[in-house]
Image (tube, rainbow over all chains, first blue to last red; front, side, top):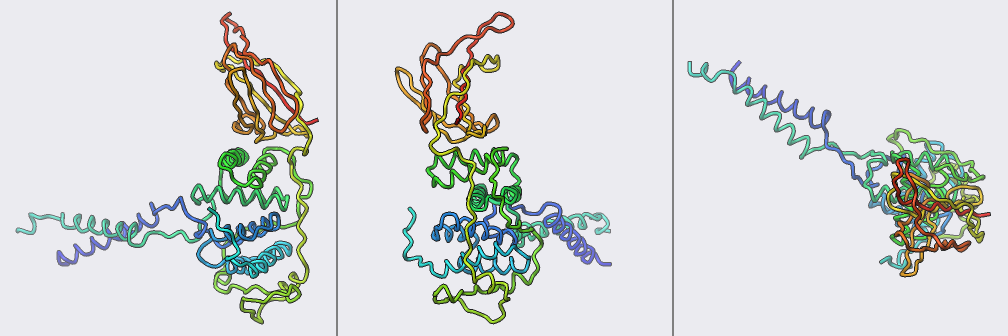
Length: 118
Length: 294
């Protein structure tokens, strides 16, 4: 085996070791993530909390701002996805109703009517 | 013979080069991406938002178990204490009154306070792994025709009947029972005594506020006046002692009066008094006052 072949094998083994260390042993840790990165079940529960809060305060603008933390998708899409997830994972009918109710309210929501928050 | 003198160092060089390349790739070029993160990895301000939302949702549902389950995802060391502190911060930062109240109420409920009687029948969602299908096939919302709205979302005929069924009745908000103090009931002085504590060198006015059920009440503003001035403090800033506890440092020989912002009985003529230790030395004692709703 030539010297170059051995050298390349050493490089490959070293790279494999580096990748193993960087991905498995000591991967980059995200400790300050945004809600956008939450797992889908947590996102669905977050949307459900927004729906519950909406029932309590009836403030659609506030609900939209809360949903906006979940990412760049529209509030309606977020609630739709949560509803879909809830359906597939046997959420209680009351929870689905809350999400449905919020979704329907969002269809009526006009951002132009919102008073900008300073 | 020249190559023999170089030995096997080239192998070590290659390995080090490889490790460096691997680390650069795994840390910089293609680091691990957390796309399915749990709530405890959220940034501190997002955690605050999350807690506030849990509290407001609890105000609606009154489901303490569900609220506990949600807060547990944040892995706070002491959930009730964290909520109480956040309530105080929210109060200081002029956050909406409803949010402060919700945080307070949930902190009290979790701290062993009043648990709403109407624990809802809503089931707690189980946090499970996500089937790929749930991410790939979002179901469009179904517009209820009786509502009379113009649908702006696409309606597909593949939606299950479940949604159609639940959309035919209007959700009734669950009545909210909050563990807040009885509105209007004034706090009266229930107990007042001197506390001699050798570990407490500064004399204090220590106030504890309880509701009619005997549970601590945070966020009560207490006004302190003395001949040369006045000040105020809030209960709940020392949740490690008691959620309804607050204190104020006294200056010896100054006569203080206090009253709660929510009205009720005022207490006057509070002066720091001396205590005697076992070895005969003297130190300042504190006043401990307990206010409660009748």
